[in-house]
Image (cartoon, rainbow, N blue to C red; front, side, top):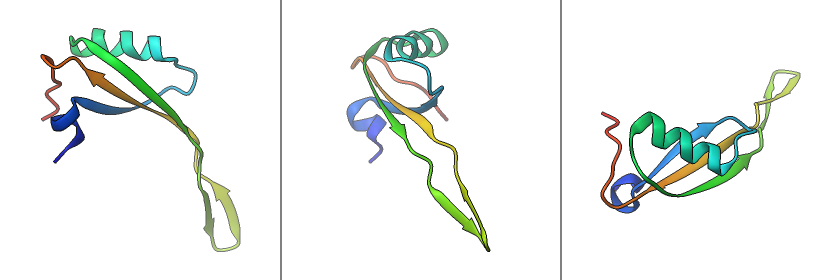
Length: 76
């Protein structure tokens, strides 16, 4: 079962400089829902090789947004 169905949580990839308050305000404004809490995690990029060339994928920030019980986001 999807995490959104059981906990009302939706993951987003957000700007690395965004804080929890900015993420909360953006989700409430864009989707018209009431946010209960926001959890964030900075994800480090992974090292990748292609032949002899060594590179790294970009680092990014993940935000998991928990909605109030009466709200949901229609994704599909």
